[in-house]
Image (cartoon, rainbow, N blue to C red; front, side, top):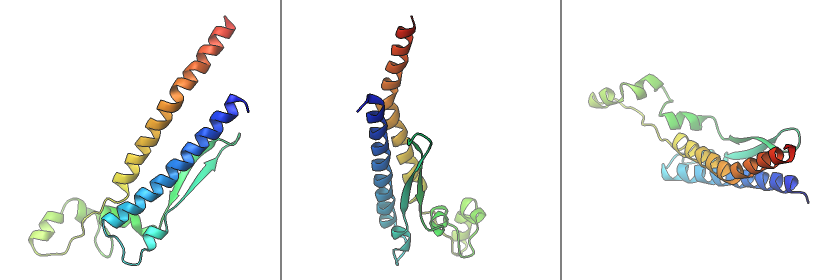
Length: 140
């Protein structure tokens, strides 16, 4: 097996492992915030690696029930985003009901995206630098 194919398969496996781990982290985050008695949001989390020409991973897609975004923002059932962002303290002072954001998605997912970026750059940054060096020395 040539090195290029080996690195490509290794990169695909790393992306697959990351996508699976991130889905598990999102499920744990839902449990930690005690979101949804039915478990439908938890069971709806799926992931898919999207390929590009040449078989490499072009993107990674996570899917879940759409209402999960509203839970993350603290909106829904008559509570608008403006109420959560600016008036939540005032509403609670006058005895009104306000929803609180449960950041099960945004905090967890963006932390994991940063981790994937770090993993890929650490693992493959040196590899690509060496490939460029080899090409330069061959052309001299």
